[in-house]
Length: 69
Length: 458
Image (cartoon, rainbow over all chains, first blue to last red; front, top):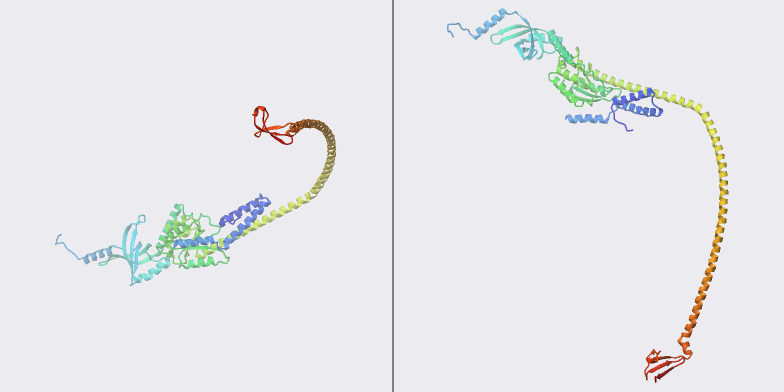
């Protein structure tokens, strides 16, 4: 599963959805394992967004610079 | 014109007017006027053009020159500025105590000797309240506040002046925050005071709007300054633009006393650029805490569920194992019985089949024998007959052949000659009839032994 570059808000939303599903106890053990893995990836992504520079964002900002001048 | 009427000089006329004014006017008046122009020249005297505008139309109603002499100005100006926190500039309305003067040369003017700063304060407050009321009436005053603040206010559009101390402080704080949070900041420079401020900030907002999908928040910041400099933030159009803006706008413009209209319409107002930085950082902390909370919840519930499943499996195991073992051995036995049955059944079948097969073989053998014998006999019979026929045929042929042989033996000219016959040739042709010969023909007669040459004498 490729890592999409989704927004922070979108990632949080997905994590909350997964949490809801898990809490509702509708999932069987295989699905559960998949969802938890996905949640782990998403959590990692969120933490990364908090602390690390993302190239795409830097690029857009640089473009703004060149567009303005 | 009647030359007999008295005429006076201009000076005399002006003096007359001056007298009339002096006699008929009060010593002083408190009057409200708006400063339309204000100049302080080298001498220290302050020259003001006071006007009165129709508020609705902005058209001038009245106008007068006013003067504050340097000595008076030295008292009034600091008094006014410290009380109001404003400078004496054009555009503000003032309540001043004036003496009406009419000078023969300089004409009508007002000599300002005192000022009531509270009027100006009240005026500004009134105007400000008017603007606020208008925004409320238009239903827009809370529109920017209603926008959902982003979970992570990370991409920040800053409206400020590059040289403003506030801006540099802000950048410093967010880029060097102790939590290693990452912020993206882009400056959209603007004038943060004076007449140009309104349009300049609106232009900056327009530029940010082009990237409305990119930025999370807009912040308007400036370092502290005199209160009057904040007047541009009480402007209607600027405030209106902010209410209409699709991204939350935060302010940190350093007001000392009252909040400005821009502060009021902003999504969140903070006192200073530093406070804005702290606010944003705290939002990041909230986000981080929330992430950790989610993570813990998931981990705990997951561990819970896994443990539940583990117990469940163990329970099943306890029940299943003996049952399954029993089942397996029962089936094992069944299988063995079936196996034996099959084996014996098969053996029986095999021996049956073998018997049948043997019988068939026997029959085949005997039938074959019979058949062969019959055929042999037939063959012998035919053979015999054939031999006989063949023998007969050959003996017939032999007989015929021997007869033919005998005949040919007798017919052989040599054997015929032997018997005393002879062959007569004439011109190498054998003669069979005497008619073929003439007298005197030469003939050759071949005997069994030798030849005779003769002449025919018929």
